[in-house]
Amino acid sequence: MQSGMGELYSDRIKRTGTAIKTAEKLVIGAGAGLSAAAGIDYNGRRFTENLRPFIEKYGMKNLYTSSFYPFRTQEEKWAYWARHISLNRFETPVTELYLKLMELAFSKDYFIITTNVEGQFAKAGVEKSRFFEVQGNYGWFQCANACHDKLYDNERIVEQMLSETRDCRIPSSMVPKCPVCGGDMEVNLRKDNHFVQDSNWHKAQDNYRKFIIATAGKSTVFLELGVGFNTPGIIRFPFETMVNDNPDALLIRLNRDNPDGMPENHGSTISFAEDMTTVINDIH
Ligand SMILES: [Zn+2]
Image (cartoon, rainbow, N blue to C red; front, side, top):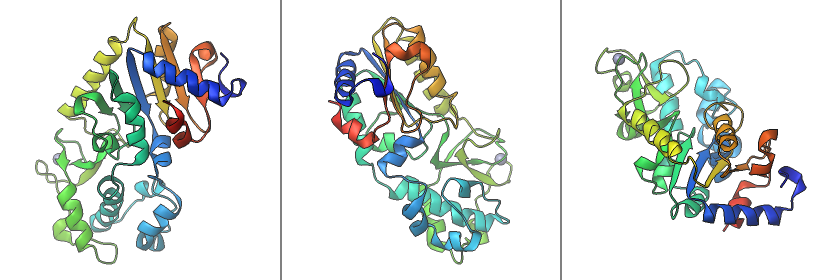
């Protein structure tokens, strides 16, 4: 039952398939590694081809670190963000890997917790009541000062910003302003203590809590995909704790770099460091 290299790939796949099929509850935890494997890559050609003018102007290295670039003006900031948001949230259709993953879940009683912000689960057809996007979503604007907790759908304004961008700037008249305090706006991504959690966020958190409470004493599979150590306190560590607490729980961890579970869970962890797309395709 040892995780990692001790057990043949085909045996781990077989056990995983059976476990998911027979589990009463399925909890999916999805991190950046899932989106990267799905093709929503923050590095390489996808980045250089889509952000070229910004890379030339600011020397940006990838789509992740460029999110923290200290733009001097709002006009420059929003020209960049319109491109970033449009690429990851609106131009990228639902990916094959997310669809394939959901084929494993749709017939189950499942819930998804994710730190990913590209809206792929909604695009894959997952009902709002079954996922919790902890870290926000590219598709929303919020007040940068978090003066009120309303979120604003940004699809149309992002599209307008893109079409009005000249020389990596949007026109001053298009810079979004908070309708309440008149200050700057921000993308609804958790990067500081001004992250806005609106009523939908709290409702999703509550749905997740209730689902977890209902797993007590039930055979439960925790399927964790591409969750690294950026924010392990959101998915990775709680999954290990919950598996440790429930004798009928199994952790299935897909992670290229850190696939092993904590030592206490060795008997109840199945680890995959193999290519995520191959593993998802092989489970049935
Ligand atoms: Zn405000």
